[in-house]
Length: 407
Ligand code: PMP
Image 1: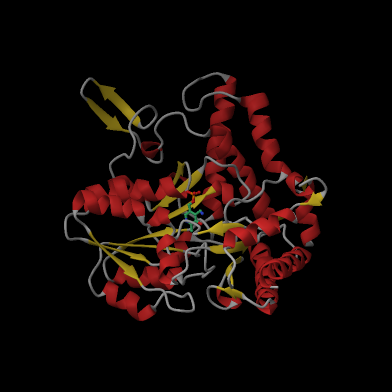
Image 2: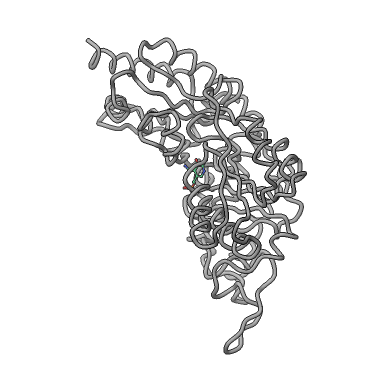
């Protein structure tokens, strides 16, 4: 299959912006576009099966429940979870991480316990722990990022030597593109007696992920970055840990029984799914998993590797452009860069006039930008539907930036 075939699956990629400029969408790290099959699955659910789940005995309720639970099975297979009850539906990665920090953290951490994070985390894998630290007095440490955008292995070892209770880190940085050695890091954390939580928001959409092979305890990701809808995310957790945790939110569906003044929590995974969930969105995510599986995650990963190698080579040709992060062989399809003397927002605005969508700002990783002593970067990010010709258009746009600001 060529990238051209993938593009045809995405109706939005046919549209033009700013009358008659074709859209060049290079912002998939923020959110991906959706293929026809995902839109159709959600449309079909609302047109034919719409009902609340787990509650009714009528036909529609049974169909809706089956579709919602089938999606869970697909997602479990997609990341090779041992059991589908280890797959908890959340709203997004952010909520999945908050669930662990709140529920596991409050039950099993106490004042003085150490949680190890890294300097390259998205705010969603920092702030939940900072909130917990304010409330419980846990200690925090951050593994240093090297100048070329990798986690410093010596610093990691020195943090583990302090016997943390939790190590929480990203699989792939949304700014540097760095792909961290998750299996190796998780094994070292386990040896030190810590549980691991991995933020897979930028990994699951772009490469094969096998949670059992990685040896992680918790793994979080978002549907909207992997061709699925917004409003649905996943927390994978090892059954033993999930079983021991108290519920996160209370209400309908998460209980087995309620009497005045007391409740008995439901079984997994329902214990963590209070209230009417995002049913259409879960079904949409199941369709996204089908879509990605048919293509093959290794095919998608290879395609993006070719794009990032090409993008880095071409970006480095442009005088004044500095790309952050490691060399292309150590990163996924994300290129964050600065342009000498030009604010990233101005870069993004000039590109936008040419129909090219990139993101400018701190990308919810302010500490990482502080580390590199820059307020912001512009970021181009790629997915299966992008092609080299779009990178050529990005480079042409950057030459226009240069002409506008440097002449
Ligand atoms: N972690 C990483 C690495 C991300 O890139 C993102 C999204 N930018 C998130 C977490 C948060 O994802 P969401 O907003 O879907 O919760």
